[in-house]
Amino acid sequence: MNSVLTVFLICCSSFIGPGMGVDESELNFCPPTPNCVSSQSWKYNYLHKIREYEYSGSKEDAYEKLYKYLDDKENVSVREESDQDYIRVYYFTKILRFPDKVEFYFPKDTNKIQIRSASVFGIFDFFHNRVRLELIRSELGFD
Image (cartoon, rainbow, N blue to C red; front, top):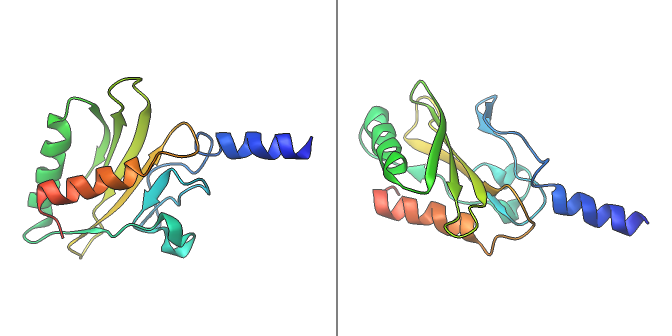
């Protein structure tokens, strides 16, 4: 019975896992499942680590560039933005419309964008969240 409960909790952990948003200048951590990546995960789990974005120029220009890119995508819904330092979107898969939560945080006094992407359902995403964030990095010319 304990093993059944353990499997159930693992399967649902990405759905009931960490919240979203910025807390004490950090994005929330990734759940223990392999369907999440975060540029701030090194403190909790190195396996979920992805390198943050770096930009040249002003924070405002980088924010507008990223926001326009996301807003122009047909399978993306921008859910929240605040004071040009945070963007939260949902990406939807093309066939079954499964949502993935994606966050971008622009800390003050730096040229970095902290990033986090997590599947809402399931345990394994076949590295789709990591590939998506690296594609955005490449297409927008972030380092």
